[in-house]
Image (cartoon, rainbow, N blue to C red; front, side):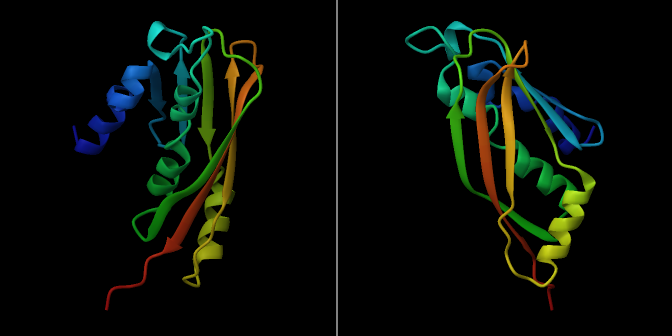
Length: 150
């Protein structure tokens, strides 16, 4: 097993995810990521609902991760900004599914082709098991095509 495949299998054991009880499942083709989190003693806030930091943590790296994996090594990808809006208290299991359509990757490659940086925005909703929106997260990323080595 390669390091990369092992890393994908143990993503849920990354300390910030493990401590919050965040479970991560990456598709075999690395085109989507499913994330879930049950309400536990370790991720509960003062009033007994999901701690906001844990809700954000379950959304933080995955657009970056998908872009890095699917754009390839010719691109620089960084997180640039993020917002989270809490819509209702999370009282049970919450989940989110990250997916970027192939057309979006093509659009990004086209926009970054000339060497300029771009800042695409991605949105994801954290849902409960009844598909109520618990939190809405917006991520802004920095992407630039690497200069060819001479």
